Image 1 (tube, rainbow over the protein chains, first blue to last red):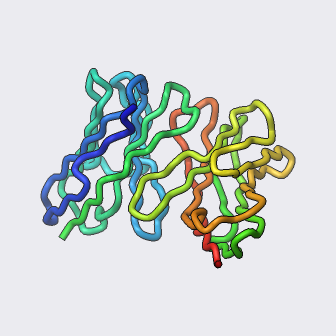
Image 2: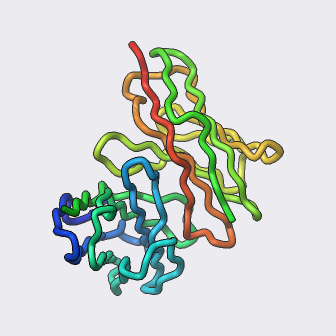
Image 3: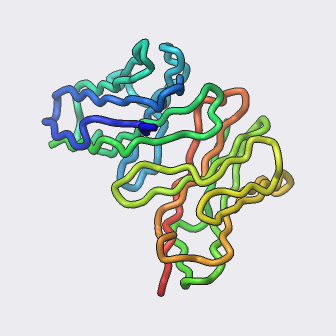
Length: 112
Length: 114
């Protein structure tokens, strides 16, 4: 069974540009979560999608947005990139109700 | 609101020694509790979970954790450390009423000395 897949693995962008990160959950998982893991700041909750709807949002500015597609894959968009957006972005999926996440390997975003 | 505190950002043990990683949580409603492990340049892997069944939970790789409501704790233990256990460990909590979102602790880096 394929795990949670994220693409790209690495992404380098210039300040002010937009970044798009993609995630495919485990087959059968309807919930997708996005977390930011910045150096020294731990895992910060970004977004939770379930059945195509945004269910919860962390304390991030509106330039962080995303969506979930009918096949449950998800996309995270970060507009107007700032240097402090440089981080590892982790996607996770779970069955509805969160009995534990399965994480992808992450996308390393570097903003220069 | 839910929160997690991991006591000790770094723990060092000798190979074969007991591993004890501490986690205390705060939750206004009955929680789900989790431990995850992260190896360098990888995502997190679920070690074990407490979802209101047995208070002593066994996970992968010989780890276990005990839910103690009176102490609001969920400490992770392993009787005998192995070199391959060296990694960063995260405790996480989610609330039944907001079951989709987990809040993570800051992590504990475990070093295993030969």
